Each structure stands twice: as C-alpha cells, then as structure tokens.
Length: 413
Image (cartoon, rainbow, N blue to C red):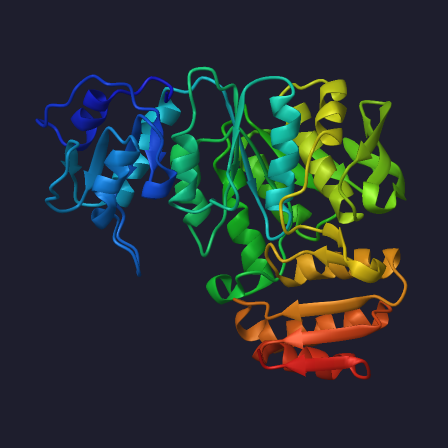
C-alpha cells in the first residue's frame, strides 16, 4: 500500500464533495496491463491511445477507482478532474508528503539508468528501496515512482529526465529530493535544450532544489564543475565530490578490465580503500559506480554496504549485454538508448576488448543543429579507435559512414 493514502483522502483533495470509501490505495497505474490489485487507475489521453477506453479493463485487473477527465461508465468509482496528469502529480505529492524516508534524485545526459540501478542495489542491501523502473523519468514516470512508496520504504532513487528548461525544477517541486547529482552534460536532446552549455545549466535545476540540510554529489571530471558549484553554494547544501582522474572525496585507483566479468578497482573514502569487483564492463561504469557510492555515502550508508551493493548490481537490458553467437562471434547489445556520450563509451569498450571489432549503429536522434556534426564525429572516432567495420543504418548515419571511410557500409533502413 502507499505510504498512508486512502481513497477518501485522495477524493477529498482532487474532487471535494465526492464521497469515497476509506480503502487503502496500493499504487497508481496509467496502463491497464500494469494494474495490480488495489491500484488507482489514471486515465491519460495520449497521442495514440486514450486511457478512458481502458477503465473497465483496469477494473478487471484489480483497480479500485479511476481518475478520469470526462464522464465514464465503469464498475469502479471514477473521480472526474480537469487534468488526469495534474491529478496524478497531486496524488504523488500526497504520498511523498507522507513519506519519512530519503529521496535521492539523479539526472544527467548519460548513465542515469546505470547509476539508478547501482543505487538500487546499494540501498536495497540495507533497507527497503523503491527506484525508477526502466526510463520512466518524466512528468508521468516520476509521479508513478513516488506512488510506489510505502510505509516500509526507506529510500527512493528517482531518475529525473528533462526535455527543456524548468522540467527538472517541476519534478523536484513535488519529489523533494534531499540528495542529488548531475552525472554529466553532453550532446543529448539538444533540439529541446540548445547547446551543451544549456544542458549543463538546465540539469543544475536538481541542485537548485536542495534543502540547506541536503547533499549534492559533484562530478569533478565534468567541465561544468564551477557552474554547478555556484548553484550548490546558493542552497547551503554540503557537497561530496567524486572523480576518476583527480583527488576527490570519493575516487578510484587500480582500474582493471576483467573482460566479460566486468571491472575491478579500489574506491577511496575518508583515507580508506575498498576493493570492488564491479559486474559491469567498461571504464565508464567506474564513474557510474563512484557516483552511486557517493550518493549512498551521502545518505549515511557504510562503505562495506556500498561495496556489497555495487558487486551485486546487474546491467539494464540493452546496456553492454554480451551474447555468444554461433562460430564464437560475440554480440554486444547496447541498444537501450543512444546519444553521442553513450556511443563513445560503447566504442571505447568495443575497441579495447576485441580484435577486429565491428560496429552497427542506428540514428542518434534529438541532436538539433548538431546532428550531422555529432554523427561525423562518431564515424571518425570509430575509425581512430580501431573499429574494423562500421555498418550505419538510417539517413543520419550516411555522413558517419562517409567519415569512417573504408570498411564502412551505409543502409537506408
């Protein structure tokens, strides 16, 4: 069940005067296929599907009530509101207000899902933890995550995405994280941001929202450190820094690739060293692990718990997943999502682990005016990194294959 919410209290907030039973609500869903017993179903109108058409299906799956925007005949009570999405946000706010645990907020252009998964592993090793599922990190996904908080939950790890200015500020307004980080700012969603400098500025909204007693986790390996420091200083929050390259509160040494098994390194905190066998390949995941460790240490977790959690972590499906095909060919599936930062990390791993590596790449979207430049840069990087063959699929890949040169093949689809 949700932290302390009942149907009558929700009705009192959303639709005063509409009587409802004092039934405990177990969570919220916008997809009737995801409904479980005791859920509140929120009928959201999308570009292709209207949730109002599935209220009865949600009831059959166990929903005890629905939030709707228009009169709807159903076998369960329906609360009619002006905006279902605003109502979902309000329900999430109510549940967050009743939550006495710690909310950790994560944003960045690359690595959010990996760091979120590492944090979930670390925090759940010590106490009941709720974390964002998949990449549900927008104005719908964040409320759904907060609606999963229960009276037993002690930590909530919330991935926060943005498509433009004030988006993260809006999410923080009702999620109210007390420990936050911006992992990085790179060329992602530039058609909604403008430049990478704009990305860095907008992502820093997650620092602006910190309370004075909060904690900011700062990546010293990013060129935007001074900007982020200024934003943190305005809040009065304390800072925990991390770095793969320079002295920091949390740092790494002895990084050693362990092939398919992952990566080994020592992480350092307050003068002590702790060996870690991280089951995630690629040196970029060492930075992700340091970020997760810093967030956990900021929440008061002991280093031993941090190590246990990092070593128990698993990769997100589609993130450097390795399969062996007939003939001994190794296929690395990194198709979860793509922007220049994540593709650079994939190329670095591919080129350092395998002889005569081949890269198959599809379009990188939402890069705005930087689209052609970014794709050409990837083609050039692949060639310089020792990639043997480059297969580009999609219109945007044609300049990348051209930049790669000999050994490159372009396919329209």
